[in-house]
Amino acid sequence: MKQDTVIFDMDGLLIDSEPLWKEAAEELFATYGIELSDKQYATTTGLRTREFLNFWFRHFKLPAKQTEDAEKIVVSRVTELVKQKGQPMPGVPYIFEFFKERGFTIGLATSSSPVLIEVVTGILGIDADLGAVSSADELSYGKPHPEVYLNCAKKLSVLPWQCICFEDSFNGMIAAKAAGMKCVVIPAPPENDRPVWAAADLKLMSLNDFTESSLKDLGH
Image (cartoon, rainbow, N blue to C red; front, top):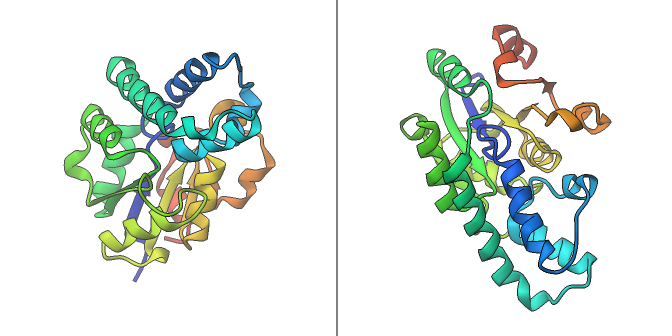
């Protein structure tokens, strides 16, 4: 058997939503008189919303009992922003056609909620292409834990080593690698030179840069 499955992350990889998540988070923290730096925000990219909020509420010593309401506010705001101005990342149509032409099964593994997943897959027009969707939203653990990737593989009836994953965040990369899968990372430009990406199997600038040679590099 060989690699015959590809699993995509969603936010920041398929849809340009990371700036929208940041916008929603900034709006929330502004109500507390707090401003997260870009460096601070980047350290928690890829976490589930509740984990992101739990981390920064503890850091800034904000009332823990308010995190549940804060999560609802942020998720609702992001969903609204994605509907208003969510744009596909460069190369989304290309990469889906690339793998469909080669007979790959396609999955989605994301930290986002089912409500946001439905909005994004509708915007991208990829619903019919997805063999399985796995959300870490209600799992015991989110990324960097591998559970969301392992669940997606199970839904697709494949083994982890058959899967190639695409990620844009450090936490997502660690989740994919911990699941025993190959991982291609496409970091945001400001993060591209970080040495941590050495843990990935392949680093690219865009989905458009993935080619037949890339498949060979991954051992396909």
